Length: 81
Image 1: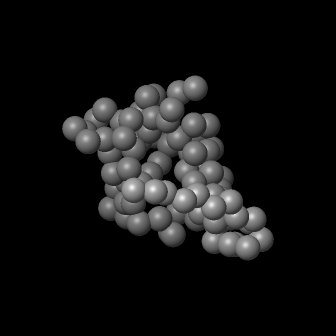
Image 2 (image 1 turned 120 degrees about the vertical axis):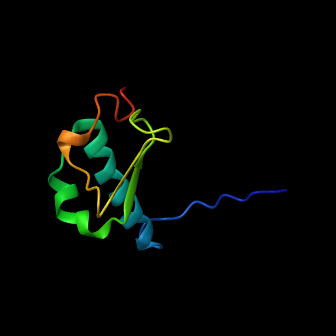
């Protein structure tokens, strides 16, 4: 199977910019405990899966019924670089 990877200019596909920004917002929460941008967009997220949280067997899922909050993040959340 051959996989082609095509380089795109952000101006050609604006939705790539949106996806990149959303991922950056989640990164800021888990890596830096910075919620300012997340709080602005949190209604747009259906769920977020924290695979590094050891509370559950498969990590922790944050959603409308279990919202993501700073006090809920474990010290092991994020990549820890």
